[in-house]
Image (cartoon, rainbow over all chains, first blue to last red; front, side, top):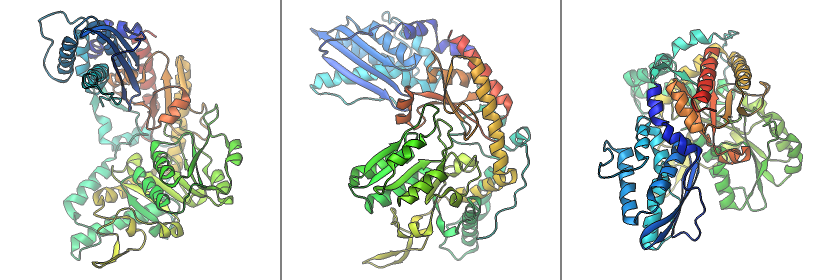
Length: 155
Length: 419
């Protein structure tokens, strides 16, 4: 039984939880969005500063469980320095990883994303792992439409 | 009304024996025996309640109040017999004062709807407490918004009880409604409702009581409580989901308008107008949850055979044991009174360093079912200073073994998360 738990709370996840990356303020962000899962109280704020279509700086502020916090931290680590089009692709890959049987593509290194796979053994926790990613992607879409977003949820 | 049902009170209650009456308690979760500690959310059902549901559909299924044939009569008899039973169960009230709803939430919405339409204006106040469940808070927010009435709150003190000294300053003739939970679903606090009701009546306010957490766990006498309207749910007291009760004083229910219209609730209808049926039917539009109501009768039988006093005593034993054991574990913050006096068995806490969701997932792998989140009380959690908490809640079939299972799983969790 600890096998499933260990898959969920891998050392990588707990490391991201205890020392989250991207916990920085981003001045005048181009992309700003907030996500909330009301039933559990998880909250996340994602800010991206763009430069020539590339994510120059990422800020992720999570108040929540180990899974949502770690997922936001992995996001921060993974998207900084990438072109926005690539970031959108990665977000789609994360959604597929968490909600379907599709594994990570082997085309390149996805950093610590692999560690999120254990969440699938605990279906009620998938929303925790998705929150930062969905918040970011909706923020990007709103930015591209030139609009502001309402807070999102993955519940 | 007929006299109170005979009660054969066994004290102490033999929870180990009662467990055998609940088929679900024999199942395993993730390879471990189920330890069900989410009773404040909903309780499990004894075989006789499950049998009653099946019996109804197998033998008597029909619609109520609108057929001449035998099945229609049997369905109506079963449905109305439960109404009589509820009337006895809550202290021997008139059967006309017992309205079936889908649950506490629907009952409280029905009440709030009345005051939304009538009787309240911008100069009026509605007094709530800081520990209300959203079901006894959001409907009043809506009433306040649409009528201009002001919401005021009786605060809780540092012992997680209502600060009764503040009541005097809040109550005056402008307060028209006092809506209060009898027992907090988060803190477990049992509130001094009869005291509050007496003082509310002195200024002419009506008293609405959310009894969702108390009706399953305490002897309930709505008249002695001094309430004007009381709401509770069957599924939190061994009955089926989708059945609730609104009790109200006949005079008050009589002048309340229905908020759902259609079949069942009318007296006479023409193409031009309609008149309403008498109490309680004017509040029961459409085909109700007949099977659920019929099976609720079996749940009430079960509770009465054990005796509500015995159930409460058993829970005092559970909560006393749980409070002691959690304190011994260390690193645990309890949200709620730290003694069993005037306290029910909902026990919310925080294990320092572990988010409630992570804790709840861990406990689930040990077969222990608890609630993690804000338990439909976001403002209260803000007051407590946490976004979420973990809640264990006990019932008549829980034993000290369950407390042991909870505590050893909590100890394991602390080690697992290296707290």
